Length: 372
Image (cartoon, rainbow, N blue to C red; front, top):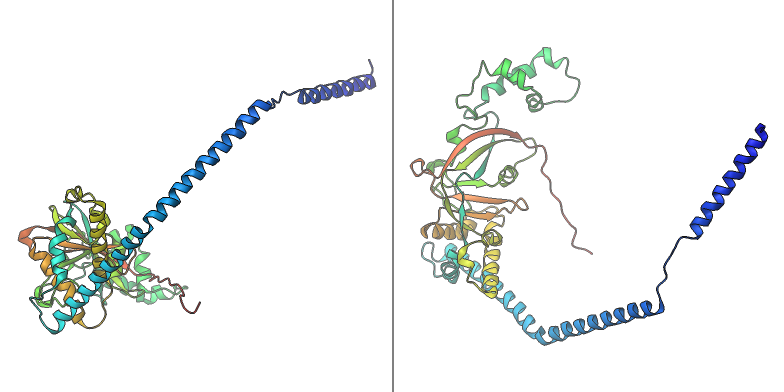
C-alpha cells in the first residue's frame, strides 16, 4: 500500500469515527415526562400555590386584627421613652438649680426598680486600657532618655546631611530597629520600671485626688479609674490630635468586679432575667438603652453638665457596685469601664505595662441630611 492509499484510509476511518460519534450523540436517551406525570406536577403546583395564598390570607387577617394592639404598643414605647427623657431633664434641672444632693426624682425610683436586673460580672483577668496624652517629653515617661538620645542623633549634622525625605523625630524613632534599640540605647538608658515605655506605673493609673477634676462619672476631688475595653477606644476617648503622642497603660483585673452595665445586650445571660416576660424585657431594654445614650453623649464646656451622670454614678456606687460600663460616644462599638475604688489595698486591678503610641489619623465620616 502506497502513502496515498494510507492517507485515504486514515481519512475514511476518521470520517467513519466522526459519523459514529454523531450517531451516538443522536441516540442519547432523553426521557420525556408522560402526560400523567405532567398532570401530577401541575396539580402539586396548584395545591402549593393555594396553600401559600391561604397562609398569606391568615397573616394579613392576623395583622388587621392585632394592628390596633401593635399601634398601641408602639405608642406606649414612645411615651415611655419620652417619660425617661423628661425625668432625666428634670433631674438635671433640679441638680443644677434646686437640690444638689437629695433630689426627688422618679428616675432614681426607676433605677431602684431595675438596677439589679443589669448586674454584670467583669471576670478576673480582664484586660483594660487607659490612655493619656504626653505633652512634649514628660519626666514621668519611662523612655524619656531614649527619646532624648534619639533626638540628638536625629538633629546631628551627620544624620541631617543624608536626610533626603521629609521626616520628623517620631518617624525616626519608629524606624529604629529592635537590634539597634538593644545595642545603642538600652545599655545606656535602661527603663527604671520594666515594661513601662510610656508613663510610669504610678502615673499610668488613676490621678491623685488633689489633681482630680470634674469628669463624666466623678466629682472634682474623687478619683476613679477610667478605662476602655480596647486600645482604639481608649485613644478616641481622650480626643487626640494628629501626630500627638499617647501613653497606653495595659491593666488587668485581679478579681471579679460587680459592674452596672448600661449596654443591655451584654447582660442577657443575667439569671435575674430568666423569669421576665418579653414585655418586661422590652421595658428594661428601652430604659437602659435610653439612659445609656444620655449617659455617654458628648458633654462640652461647663462642668455643670456632668451633674446628672455624676449623681447617678454616686448612687450606683452607693448600691454596692464596683464600677460602671457604658458605650463610647466617640467610637462605634467601643465601651468604657470605670472602676470606683482605686486604692492599692483593695486590689481591684494591676497596671502591667505602658507603651508609646503616635496618632497618625483621626477619621470622621458624615452624611449630608439637608438640603435634600
